[in-house]
Image 1: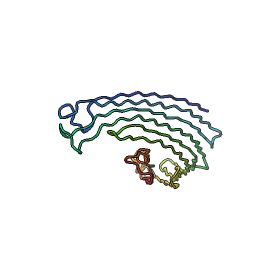
Image 2 (image 1 turned 135 degrees about the vertical axis):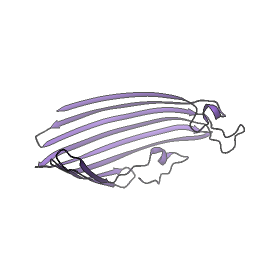
Image 3 (image 1 turned 180 degrees about the vertical axis):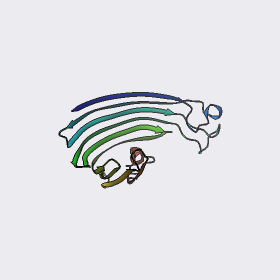
Image 4 (image 1 turned 90 degrees about the horizontal axis):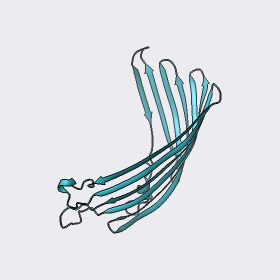
Length: 221
């Protein structure tokens, strides 16, 4: 049996000329940008070897992030034109909670199988100004997942075949298969490896919900 706990805190601050603004030599507007963020990650895990054939694990973790930024305008000339980039200032908050259960079972001989399920809940909001235009949104979503994998291992050969399914709130279920094989040519010689898989990525909260550039109709990549 193994119980694990962890907490990590990060605080970062940045100041300087904004990216693509010309730097100290060419920037027309001499104001510095300011970016401040704070992240807290915490979690708990439990792992137990129930028998010689069965190992299971439970985990729960929380990620909490807050940030604020103030970026001055990037001017294209002393008398700015429409090509200039307006100033922006934002306060953002993001929280993610994840829970998972995994099982590993030795079937027989060199064969083993693993299967599990998970859930992820996310919520984010942003409040700010782009130039003089208000830019604010709040969005949340949850995602459930399940996975299974079959493995074979011997002295020289290792092979896996698996499938993962994810169902995101507001999106169709997505299946992600994967397979891999590894063969050692001789006892002390090199290994040949090959793998294949499919994956996907949900649109970011900004891509979905930002009132200026967001699009609620976006599909997973």
